[in-house]
Image 1 (tube, rainbow, N blue to C red):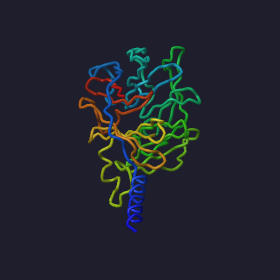
Image 2 (image 1 turned 90 degrees about the vertical axis):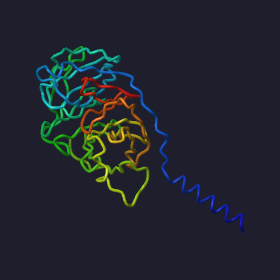
Image 3 (image 1 turned 60 degrees about the vertical axis):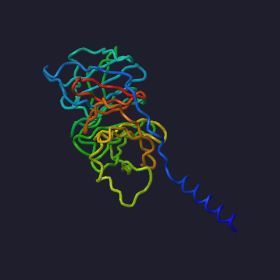
Image 4 (image 1 turned 120 degrees about the vertical axis):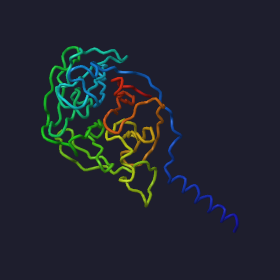
Length: 274
């Protein structure tokens, strides 16, 4: 009888453990690369906040841009962080989010408000010469939304003001529903609401393409990056940032080429962490 009770207790314990999602101990990220943007705060049309960083795997180049104006700088870098574009290279677009589309092998972006979505035209050296509007009007939750692209699902995701992900079809820019996130949580909690903590998170999300940890969010209050499963919406990993890492509540956060990017507005530099 006692053996049966002990066996039952052990079975219940292991069942409870297996049902709980255990987050591994946080890894501390280290800075591995810098992308120094052109111009200074005293120059004409310099830009302030970093919109995004995208990696072109065919050309082996980084594309980084400011948010806020069609005349703000965009810069192209090689894999070592050496800038290849000129001092006067412009975005041609009021950028918010930017990504690489492997189907078209192009760098694409979403813009402010009703700018829509665009696709860069590159010269033989991979430098943008113009941008073609793919879809006009506001194909996003808010005027300031930052788009991230899932190559597996062929969806553009936006982290909305409620702490969830709205998704849009890459081929039509039409809304296809949303993904419910459970901010900061690894399992269900009856007394939890995203509204209680959403202000702790940067308004820009990132897409990692890591199975089970596809969505990256920057918790600027706790100074860490949190990874979430796009299937369950729960947190699966935490990544600690160095004390010196620049964190902001809006924009200035991206992911590409296996690297998390934070924009330092004081030095006007994208800093890459792994």
